[in-house]
Amino acid sequence: MPTPSMEDYIEIIYNLIESKGYARVSDIAESLEVHPSSVTKMVQKLDKGEYVLYEKYRGFILTEKGNKVGERLVFRHELLEEFLEIIGVKEENIYNDVEGIEHHLSWNSIDRLGDLVTYFKEDKKRLDDLKEIQLRKKNNTK
Image 1 (cartoon, rainbow, N blue to C red):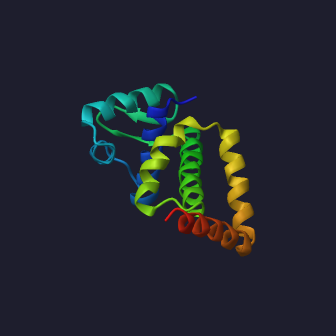
Image 2: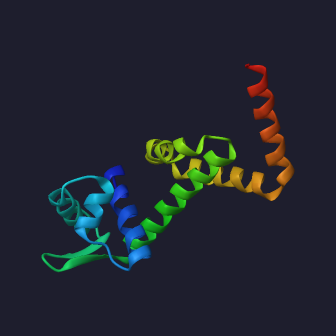
């Protein structure tokens, strides 16, 4: 089971490979705002955990295991963003809120949030009702 830090790296690597076709140490370092040497150390740990195949001075790729984990982590991140958007969290807060909570929820909780997102998306009236509640609450506090 990857640690939260390992998850951050796997998610970044997965996203880079999906968008660019490859992931470089410098790209990961920039995304996570860490030194390239820290990325190299983590990639070596990910290699030991069989999430990436790493060859010194040659680069690395995600293994099948790493790709599956990366896909699941991106799903979790996107689901949490969608959930926070549905419940009315301000757009400028969503990314940081997701980063703050994503490692602290069980996969069971993530699955239940997915059910809730589906529930609201299946019927526009449910979303409208929620927005009406939020509007009433906002107007009562003024």
